Image (tube, one colour):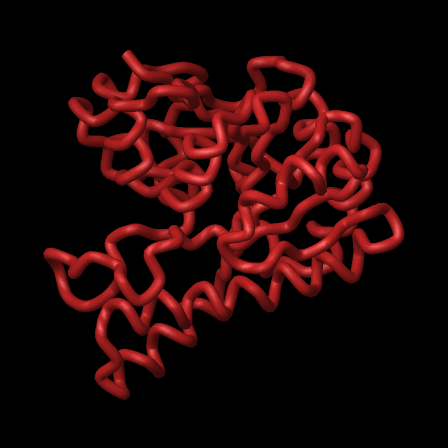
Length: 236
């Protein structure tokens, strides 16, 4: 639908929850790279976890949890819209993907939520009531369904490591790896949802995803320009 566009997924807990210090520099980079026709996806972060906690206590089923999670992400979409409004940023209503070509050609920066569009029809999870399909997978599904040029995850680390670098100083950065190889390694910590890597094995359009540290100025620009910054996970 929009093969010239790039989906940029902003982490909730890793980026947006950090507030002004993390978000304002990224907003400036997004504006400076507007020519790349970005679709910006936001995750819920701490707000989503708070929603889950209350909803689980109330006994709300999986489909309702998925709807509420999307609602918490819409809060961040509105906040980001306020920062990008004068530059053409606008929060897109849920599931209005058919409007994207018009929006992008009109110079608008679409801001979308990350939760997959299953909503009330979210499949039951094999473990508990929390939705199995999370925000990272939703961003990837959006990119794959739209057939965009590239998919970039913006996190708070330099990429994928062999272990959690916060608890293991010996963890090594993995600059590039295949999806099947990554799953076979059974790493103790993944920076994106495992479901993304599993789905990547069957990709038709988005056969690689890039993970960058959005807290480092210039990383988003480099990734949009095609530089192999961070980690690249690809279909193998």
